[in-house]
Image (cartoon, rainbow, N blue to C red; front, side, top):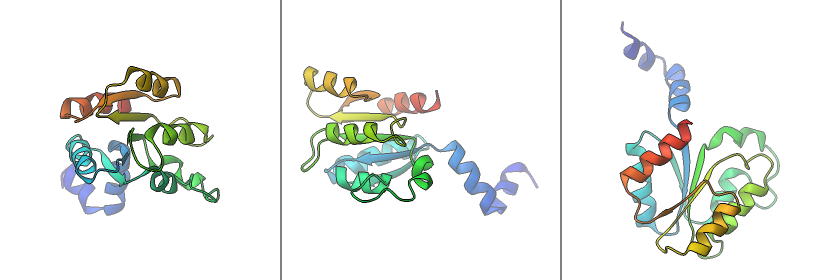
Length: 153
């Protein structure tokens, strides 16, 4: 039995291998089309993807939602990267970034902001607040490859 069939025959071994090899990305965007595009690009780059349609949902998933301060430890390794749209109703990507960076547990997780608007003051504000990168929409496979390199470093 070769190594690949040995790994696939044991589902628990496969699960462990996948988690180590596949970065887990949380993609946050209020546009379904943009979420699907980001998800497809990330999956093409061998990432595990979870999507959220807004900031509060993303915070809930991360365990940072209101009144969600129990079992935070179990969520630490949940995501390796957060990619969020800047313009969303209710909570902007900038506000989401600030909440993540305020959290003692999540602050090390890189956050990438994407926007269809190239506004230098907005870009600088996000980078000063701790965003890893600021990318313009629509994202391309080459953008995701850059992200993948960041995740691996």
